[in-house]
Amino acid sequence: MNRLAFATARLMRRDAPLAALSVPQSALLADLSGRHVALIGNARALADQAHGARIDAADRVIRINRAPMPSPASHGTRTDWLGLATRLLDTDRARLNPGRILWMSPKRKRLDWDSASSPGFYLHPLADIDMLAGRLGAPPTTGAMLIDLCLRSDLESLTLYGFDFFASLSLSGRRNAAQVPHDFAAEGAWVADLLRQDHRPDADPLRRPLHVLRAVQSCALPPRGGHQKQAGKLHENHQGRLGLHGADLRHPGIGAGFRRLWL
Image (cartoon, rainbow, N blue to C red; front, side, top):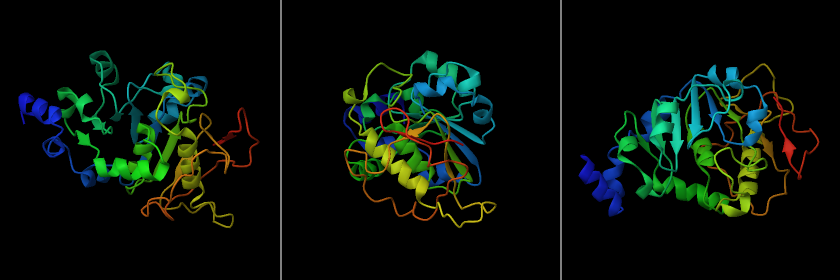
C-alpha cells in the first residue's frame, strides 16, 4: 500500500486495508512467549521511584503514547514496543526510537503513515477493543488494552509500572479523571481481579504460575467494591492463568481509598 491508498482507506474508514499493514496478532504474541515484560504507565507517581534499572532489565519494555521519561533512574531508557492512541510527534519518535509500534485506538483517522509503514507495525482489532469496552463499561485506556493483549500470550511475567489509574494524574497531560472518557475505577477493579485470579494462600511460593502479573510500588488499585461501575467478567483466556508474586494486598489504604501494592 502506498501513502495515497493509506490516506484514502483512513479517510473512508476502511479498516480491512489498514489491517493488511499489520502483523497478525498471533505473530505479535509469539514474540512475548517465555519473556519477562515490563509495561510502563504514565502515572506521575512513577517519577518518584527508582525502577529504571529493573525496567531496562526486562526482556520486552512496552511504553504508552508519548511516554514521558523524566529520568532514567525512574523510567529506564528502552522502548521495545510503543502502544499508541495518539499521533506521535517526530521529536517523540526520535527520542523513544521504538522497535515496534502498536496502534491501539479505534480512531484510525489519527494513525499516521510513518507509524503504519514502520517495521513490525500492529493494528489492534476493533472487535477486541469493543469486547474490553463492554467488560469495563467505558472506552478502555491504552494501558488496559495492552494488559489485555499481553495476557493473551505465553509470556513469563508481566510487570506493571506507573499504573495508579489517574490517582496521581498523568505525566503526559494536565487533564483530570473527569475530563477523559475512561472509567479508571472499573479498570483498577479489573486489574485487581486479574491479580487475585491465581492468588492461592496454599500455593507453593517457589512454584511459578503459568503467567505472573505484578504491580510495583508506583501502582495503586481501588479496594474491592469501591468502583462506580462494575467490571465485567474476565476474558476466558485469562482465567486461571495469573498469579501474584511479592505484593502485599493487606497494606492499608493510602490517599483517597486506594489500596497500594508493594513488590
